[in-house]
Length: 59
Image (cartoon, rainbow, N blue to C red):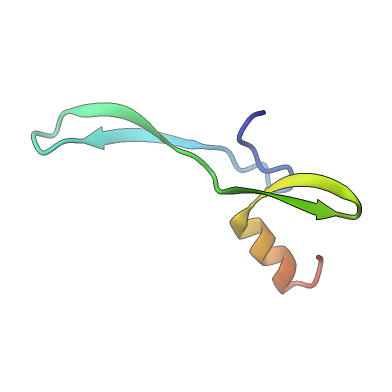
């Protein structure tokens, strides 16, 4: 399974680790995916999307 939000389409970001000597090595920031049941279907959404859905009474 890929790390993609099924509602907002948010994906992992990439960038660099920086050591004290400023050497750069690649790293990845994964999204905070949560499995939630919406209308009887299990979907994987980010925590931020889930918060927005609850705030707007869509869940």
